[in-house]
Amino acid sequence: MSTAETACHSTPEQAGLRVEKILFDQIPQQTRLFLDYLRDPVALRRFYPEAVRFHYDLPERRDRVLAHYQTDRAAVCEALERMNQSWGASEKTLANIRQLQDADCVAVVSGQQAGLFAGPLYTIYKALSAVKLAACMTQRGIKAVPVFWIATEDHDFAEVTKAEFINRDCALGSVSVPAEIHPDGSPVGRVTLDESITGTVQSALEALPKTEFSEDLEKLLRDAYRPGSKFGDAFARMMTRLTGERGLILLDPLHSQLKQLAAPLYADAARRAQEIAIAIVNRSRELEAAGYHAQVTPSEDSFPLFWHDEKGARHALARNANGKYQTKNGGDEHSADELADWALREPERFSPNVT
Image 1: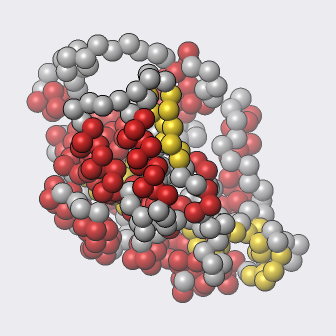
Image 2: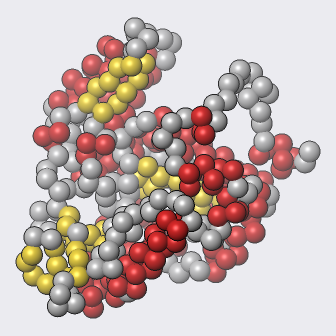
C-alpha cells in the first residue's frame, strides 16, 4: 500500500477500537433512494451526475470544478478570514484560508444547521469527514481544504433548540433553549441568546456524568454559549474549539461580504426562475417514475429564492396569474427581472429556497 493509501485508510482495529456495524437497511425509515445510493452511487448518475464510487475517484473532477469557478477568491477568503478570526480560528485554519486563494485549490464542503451545543453527533462526523477527505486529496497531490457551511439562513428554530445526550443515569437526557427568543420568520443564525442560556448550560453540566473532561467541557460551553451572542456565532465558536486545530474553515452565509458576492448568482436564479422550477418538477417526476420519492415538491410557479421583509422575516414567492411573483399573503408583485435587479442591489433581502 502506498503512502497516500496509508494516509487515507485506517481501520478501527488499527486505532484500538472495537466496532460493531449496523447496516442502514437494517434501520427503519430509510428511503430507497438513500439505500440505493449507498450500494452503488454510480448507478444513480442519472440523478447525481457527479457521483463517484470511491473517494479516490474525486481528483478526476478537480479540473471541471476549477474551470467553472468564477467568484473572486481574494474577496471570498477575506470574508472567511474575518469571520473565522472572530470565532478564534487556529493558525492552521487561517493557513487553509490563505491556501484557498490559490487558483488550483478546491474546497471539500460539508455543512449542517447551527444546532444547540453543536447539534447532533453527525454534525461532528460531517465536519471531520470534510477534514479527512481534504487530507486524502492533498496526499494525492490535489490542493484541497475543508469547509463547513453553517446553515444560519435556516428558519426552523424548533429543529435546533434541543441538545440530547446520555446523562449520568445512562438514560437519554436533553436541554433546550426557549422558543420565545426566536422572532417570527427570522433566520436562526441571527437569534440572540438571552440570560436563559446560562441556565441551559448549567442544566446540561449537571445532567452529564463527571469525567476527566468535565472541566474542559464546562469552559467550552460557557465560552461559546453566552448571553448576547448570536445563535450562529455560538455554534461557530464551539465548532472552532472542537475542530480548529484540524484546519476546518467555517462559513456563515449570512455574512454581508458573502451576500454581496452571491448577488450575481441570485440575480441569475431570479431571471431563470420559471426554467428552474420546470426542471425541478420534471426531475421529481423522473424520480417517482423510477420508484423513488420526490426530494422536493415545488410547482412550476415556484421561485428559487426567499424574499426577506424589513424585519428579516422570509417569505416564499410564487408566480401569479399575471406572470409576476408575490408572497402567498399577496402584496406587491414583481417580475422576474425586477426581482433580479433587486437582488443585485440588496442581496441581503434574499436567500436560497430549498430548491
